[in-house]
Image 1 (tube, rainbow, N blue to C red):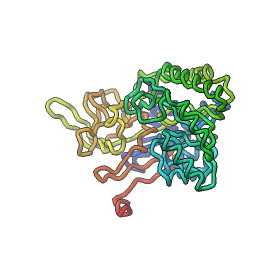
Image 2 (image 1 turned 90 degrees about the horizontal axis):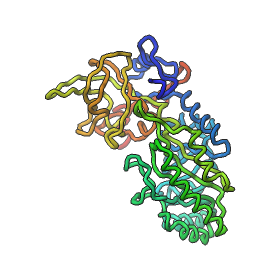
Image 3 (image 1 turned 45 degrees about the horizontal axis):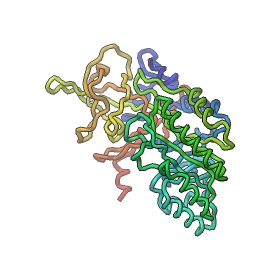
Image 4 (image 1 turned 90 degrees about the vertical axis):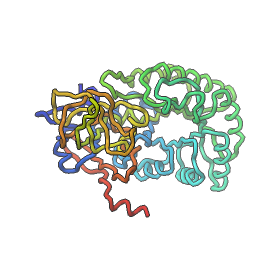
Length: 414
């Protein structure tokens, strides 16, 4: 069952190993909570994308995991970057990803962020409002540059995912309404300091069915035809990301082969280069959060496993009621039904609720799977807790890629 999450995950002599590394030895050296990532898994997923989308520009969604070492690995694999902030742009550049392979989305780009991106000559801005278009034109003029833009179009479809990560629905803050897209493209073409080069669509995240993509791509392909008829030629068709991963043992992921066939079905005839923005589907199951059991507590017939990782370390369960599969660092056959909770002073601080969990005692370790995406990148210092260390694993070797924060680090803020 573990190999369904990652081919690099297995028990050896009763101890969980990941990418050939004994995780018990790792926590003894680095402590917990601890994020660990499999380099082999990341590279394998990156190469599967390249195999299926040979001519596409693959831009890793940096918001899913911004660790500099992982960005460098993906840059080595030929990936560009999909960024949504000046910080993500800055780190992507420091990781060696060239501006010409960076696309920049986000509804609230500031003047400072836009100027930075213009100066770095990014591939294109995925513009999300008319006001952004006009500001981008004005700033490009002031910098004596001509910026490339695509328009993010909201196809107004239901991606059948959690509403907080559904970005293509009618009442979402993202993008231009489908019904107004042609009008906005016409306005964009009149702006002298902008070059209209593409169209952008991103309908949501953690999608496990093909039908929402088919519905969205059909609408976007029809819009592309209308733009061509108006003489607006698109160099790029950016289809975003959104492919889901296995969080529950019963989840079935969309294969990249099936996804490629859907992309080809709607866009093969267009003289445009496809851009994809995978994030979770590259790094999600490449990461694990390891945590140590502090206490076992029974209260009015309910069991609580209290661990040293909390909602500040892994926010997804508290924010989205998300499921993460939990296994013991030591292999075992005994289980207990209860809640896995952290030390944060919030009732919403939980990692699993009403779940069949490994039967463990104080000092034992649990492994929270599928934590490579939106784990550390959404972490915080709430309750003044230092953020975890991150370790990169590779074929039996490992290295620290972000040290654990210390109390002394807190003083650097003031």
